[in-house]
Length: 223
Image (cartoon, rainbow, N blue to C red; front, side, top):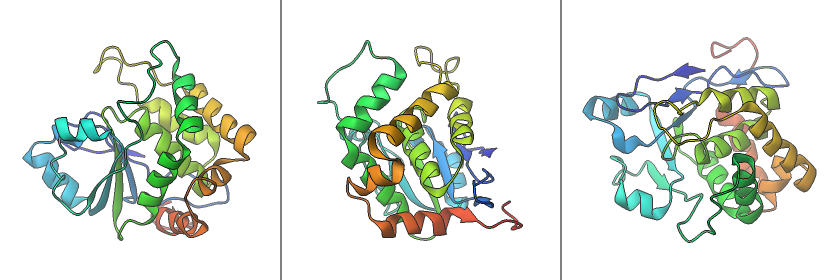
C-alpha cells in the first residue's frame, strides 16, 4: 500500500501490494481509495489524471454530489453509485459496526452495484471515494478485497490505517476489529461476501473481472 500525493486529499492510497491468500498480491495502480475529490486543486486533478484513472466510483449520496460536486462530475470516468441516501433511517446512537451492519443488511443491492461498477470499469485504475474515505469507501473496499482473496486480517489492517480523528474531529476511530466483525457477519449471515453480492445483483462475470483486473501473480513486479 502507498499513500498518494493528491494535493488537498488527506486520505488517498493505492492498495497495490496487499498479499492474496492464494499467492500474488493486489496489482499496483489498479485500485485506490480516497476521501472526497472535490477538495483537489489543479495539481491534484492533474495527479489523478496522471495515475491513469479510468473510473471514479463515488459512493456519496446524490445530495452530497450535487452540493459538493466532484471536479470530474462532467467526465465519463466519474460514476455516482450512492451507498447511502438522506432518506435512510437515522441511527445516531449506533456504533460503527451497527451502522455498517444496517447498511449491509438493508441495502445489499447498493453494494452489488458498487462492486459491478469496479468490475465494469474500462482498463486502468479505479478510485473508490466518499466524503472522508473511511466508512462507505471502507466497506466497498473491504468487500472488494475479500472477493479477490485478501485475508481478513489484512483487510482490517488497511481499514484501520484510515485514522481521521485528528484531521476531522467527530469521526469515530476506525478499528480493525470493526471490519473483522463486518466480514464475520457476511460469512455467518450470507455465506460470505461472494454469495452476498451475487444474491444482490452482481454476477459471476463481475467477480471474475475483479480478479483479472486487480490481482497480480506471484513474482510479478507488483508483488
